[in-house]
Image (cartoon, rainbow over all chains, first blue to last red; front, top):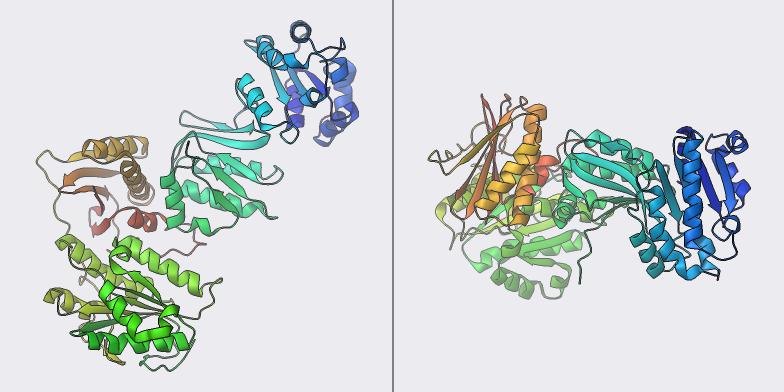
Length: 265
Length: 323
């Protein structure tokens, strides 16, 4: 997902910064190569820069949110001045798991860093590996980010938006609006794309206004096509729709797992 | 498939449905047919289900003794909830016991429908339900015996049992019913829809390709007529399925008419296509692999009653939800 984000930025003529921590800089270049992008030319021209956490977040030896934000602001300004279409930044935040000096100011940083990106052709993904951070930390970081969605919608119309998103360390396909007979094919196309995702595929229906039976059938069909024991996990479907799925027997498909919203205690 | 049974099984090599009426006047007559039916089924490792009155469940349990532990008993009041849901529940039962994952070659069912407390519309639709069983389960390895208690049932209900069941049981033997009328036989089970009100109590909307307006209309009207938001969602989903059929296969346009009739909300969806749709539309279980035909099967289960009437000017599907 991150390499797609970076490759997309390069293709759009944006300047791309990547701060590694868990991976070697060379690994990032090889992801891009396997994604069909030539990172070497971009690195040579300065369009792509891959740095380590020590060179970036912890450049002064202490984590200083103000210095980091100022440096990103400068990067954004310079990138635009140099003729790039925008600035795209992504950072592996696992360095924050080590006892780095100034770490207590991480939350402050995540809040302040918005000012760099707000209102500019610039964007950022802060990568928090859900397996390494505890749930409380993840919740806090989530609250600091304006939206846990960072990729462009795969389909968007006046009544329906289908967008990949990233939430609580998981990829998820977010379906917003209405899926009736006129939109079934768009849902099918989006689900087809999610087959490339590793493991189970999650679909969040919390912002769904309506779906008809043909739309639900598309979910079954997509679940069946995942194969290899993978499942399509459809989350936050209304109890009425869960009932529909059971009366028509769609719940008999082992690859489809449907859950209603959790009831708040 | 088993061949030759204690009870006569005409065409004994057939794997399909046997559907028999059991009209009884005494407890002894009820037991004389149902006890050997259960015991013979258990001996052949059939799944055995008895859906009947609490009094009959007690009688059967006493007579079956230890064997009653292998029979599944369900109170009829709970099971005979709405024709579409009940038919689907039987279908699931048969499928789970005899399908790929089931371990039985056949299921045996004692199914005593509930008739008291039904109004004229419900009685007619439950009668059609008994008739459509012959079509919906035609190829299923199911043997269904439907008891009718002549001591308490209105004579027309008993008379209809002879029309809806191909065979009638007396004690351990069965014979063909001379009054049997197959569900698809022309005109026999046809019933004119009662006319919708035309005095301003009805809300009418015409529709074309855009169904967003139909959904908004139905949800708003249903709530204003006293329906809960959850039930209005259910009705909206059902109407959308029927309207989608109208747009895609029924001439492209249609009309929704919605009104309240006593304790029911009634909604007609009429299309503009010429079809020969049968009254039993939505009663026939779709196979899991088929791409279409799940819509009305779902609608039958989401609504309390559904009627279908094909005319030269278009087909009307009438949905009833009880408040």
